[in-house]
Length: 153
Image (tube, rainbow, N blue to C red; front, side, top):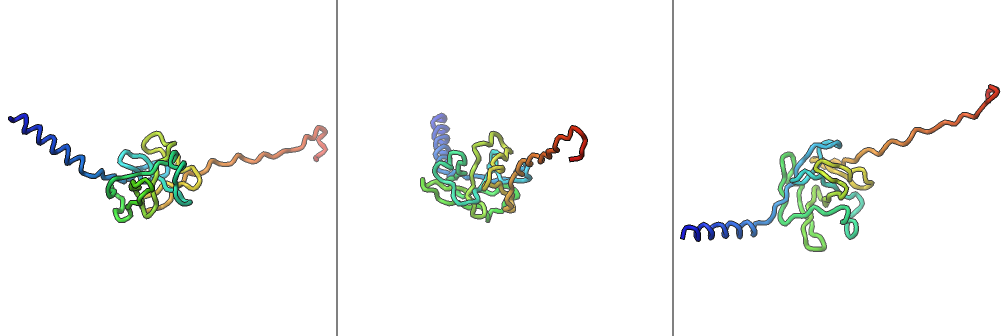
C-alpha cells in the first residue's frame, strides 16, 4: 500500500512537471568581446542586423526558442525580453525586439565566433551591438627598383 502511494505521488509530480512550460533563461557571460547575452548553458546569443533569418539561414544560425516567457538572469532587464512566433508556431526569444540566434560555428560556452560574421552581432545586457574586430589587413609592400650601379633611381 505504501509503495502504491509513493508511486502515485511520483506520477503526479512527473505529470505536473511535464505540464509546466519550459522557461528559457537569458544570462550574461564574460567573453573576449566583453559581457554578452547567453543562454543558461553559457552559449552566446546573436541577432541579424539585416532582417529576419529564415529558411536555410537557420541551419547555421538556429533560433533561440522557448515554450514560455523567457526568464531574465542577473543583470538582464526583464522588460527587454520577449518572444516572436515563428512560422512553425514556436516562440523565438527576443531582446529589445531583436530575435536571438545561436551560431553553428560556436563549439563551446563563451565562444563568440559569430560576432566576426558581417551583419551578425552579439549583444550586451544594455543592448550594445558587439562585433569582433576584423583581422588586420596585411601591411602594404613597397617595391624599390633594383639599382645595381647605385645611380639613385
